[in-house]
Amino acid sequence: MTTPLLSMQAITKDFPGVRALDDVNFEVHLGEIHALCGENGAGKSTLIKILGAVHPYGSYEGQLHINGVEQRFRNVRDAEQAGIAVIHQELALIPEMTVAENIYLGREPCKFGIIDKTRMYQDAGDLLTQFGLDIPLHGQVYKLGIGQQQLVEIAKALSRDARMLVLDEPTAALTKSEVDILHKILKQLQEKDVACIYITHKLKELLQIADRVTVLRDGKTVATQSIHDCTEDKLISQMVGRELTTYYPDRENAFTTEAAVALQVEELCTYPSEPPQLDNISFDVHCGEVLGIAGLMGAGRTELINTIFGAYSGKWSGKIYRDGKPVQIQSPRDAIQQGMALVSEDRKQYGLILENDVVRNMTLASLSISKEITSYGVLNRSVEYQKSTHAVNTLHIKTTSLDVPVRQLSGGNQQKVVLGKWLMTRPSVLFLDEPTRGIDVGAKAEIHALTAELADEGVAIVLVSSEIPEILGMSNRVLVLHEGKITGEFVNKNLTQEDILRCAAGT
Image (spheres, rainbow, N blue to C red):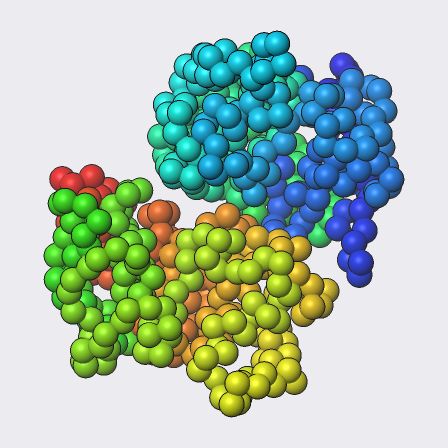
């Protein structure tokens, strides 16, 4: 058998109080797309950080070989010089710089010691054309959507002529068309013998693109197998160590339209542009109901719930009623005072303060409304820790301590911290914007069960999701948006994906 391009043998990595990787073995061959999967906290990101020298030689046990030669990477540059390009979940782009400047950052072509911008933009344009990427070269990165920013990061890696491309959750924020572009690029690279390590929680996607898959669980290698020997159920069982008999709780008889209306919205419009981004939106949601909001990217789903929650920066008009009474909501503080909570789609930018510890993040939303945690402006640390400990135990958040910076937690556990933060406010209306994006199947099942449990307790829930099976599996009723307008409203009985997609496309 040929020598693998990459061989990681007996890799063990410890952090204070926890063993992240325990005797892991992993191999990748030339031209192979090798998927790496496992629950959040299984060790996937730690393994690729060792490969990319974020965790340098000496900070772990075991051996790393490239083409049979042992490597002792001291820093990220060593790994890059060995032909390894890693694209982490946290994008490493400079927002104020242009697309071309980001692609060649630190490797700008020079002429007589001065950056040759003409050549840089020409090379960047040729690269994007070669891989079919339609991204404005002269546009500043912060003006791009998160999906296009992800594609810029990928273009940046491609510009290095890497022999091995490592993608950590590359499609979490991509549209279907952008995912198709990425997969086409990977197939082109495969024909050039470039290897790819592909980390994703989207198992259907994994089964379509990968040649082999390695499953990690609790920091250990569970299995490495051909994709032809895999099914979605088999992978889930290997990842979680148990059978998941159902992805969605049964809510068919859990809600009645006779329940009181918790939230009513009338004729809501937003005005950053002409025509309005949201145009004459009216709906209501009952106590104990899960109202699903579906639509394609850019349909206005996030703008809708942000406006209701007081987090929209532009002008808007319309009326909002809570329990039948009109309310004025000008800021998130007003919304919180009205018993609302919002789990935003981007937990790292809007849901967490990553450098703060778990306990600070957990109590953040409650400080202005809980007289138990704060009294006359004084923080009661004992109560703060007591309530945070209860939330951590209830939500099964994996952390070695409440004092650990939340950035050190896995994606699924970070999402649970965001949920815990809002549940501590005891909301009666809960907005969930892509609550299971970028987390594993086990954590998804837990969040689905928690959502159903809250609804059964009478909380009115508005669920925004790009995953139509999640909308169908969780919702009592479904609203569909297209270009800022409601194009469909359904009771979720015998509802199909096709019904939703037709309305989402405006037909």
